[in-house]
Length: 61
Ligand SMILES: [Zn+2]
Image (cartoon, rainbow, N blue to C red):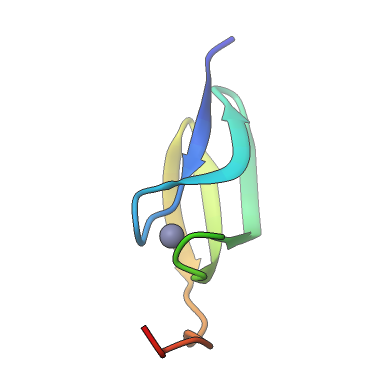
């Protein structure tokens, strides 16, 4: 079974989540500890789709 780190679609860094080849996520609230972006995503076969991107709460950077 292949597994990968879930990559943040904003900063391309690893999050703390791992997904498997057959992992399916729907409307999953992804929070990236690196860039502090939060988004609702779908994941299927390692493909991440952003469903909804809430306004960034920290715009100081
Ligand atoms: Zn990020």
